[in-house]
Image (cartoon, rainbow, N blue to C red; front, side):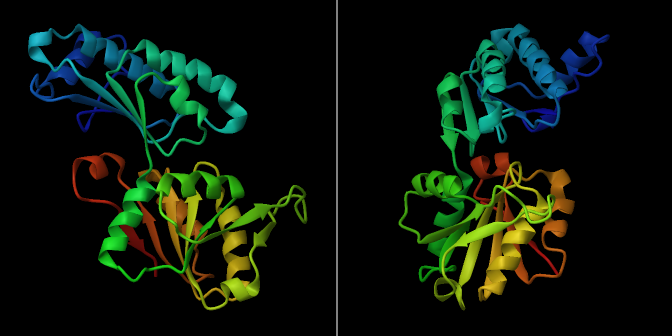
Length: 274
C-alpha cells in the first residue's frame, strides 16, 4: 500500500490512469507544504504502486503542488543481510524516483542508507526511551534485552545512552528440527528479580522465537518482561497475541505508528494484554 499525505493512493486500476490521477491530486496537494509518501510494503506490487504514484505527482504542475517530496519507509523490502543483493535493485528503483529525501525507520543493515540517495535514518526506540526517561527519571526497566548480539550492537549505537543490556544467542541446531533454541548471555544472578524491556524486530523474528526467549528468561528468575516491537504493522495484532498468549506474564507490548511519531507528540501505542 502507498499512502500520500496520509491517504491511500489508488493505483491498481491501471486501465484508468485518469481516475488514479484524480485520486492522487484531489484535495491532497498543497504547494505550501511538503508532499509525503509512505510505502507500507506487503508485496512487490506496492513498489509498482509507488512508482506510479510518484510519476503522477511529477506530472502535476509545480504551481499546484510542493516541489519537495518525502518518502517514508518503515520497512525496507529485501534489506535483511541475506537479501542485500536484491535490495540494491530496489534502491536503484527508489533512487530513480528522485525523492527530495528518504526517511528509513530502523534499517536492518548499514548498507541501506549508503545505497539510498538523500537518506536519513530514524530509530523510533531512541524517542521511545527518551520519552519514558523523562516520565520516569528513576528508570522503568533494569536493563534492555535483545534477540541477538547484532541487535545489541545496532540499538546501543542508535540509542546513544548508556543503558545496561543483555542478549540472546540462537543456537544453529534446534532441539527437534523445528523449535528454536536460544542461549541467554547472562547469569541467573543477573536476571533474578529484574524487570526488563525485550526489543524485538517483527520482520526478523517469528512468534516462536520470542516465546522461546521469554520462557527462558522467566525460568532464570526475571520478574517482569515488557515487549517493544519494531516494524509491527496494523495487520500484525494477531502476532502480538500469539507472542504472549497468556502462558507468560508479559505486562505490556509497545509499538509505534510511524507517521504519527514524526508529525505529533505521540511516541508509541500501548497494547495492554489481559
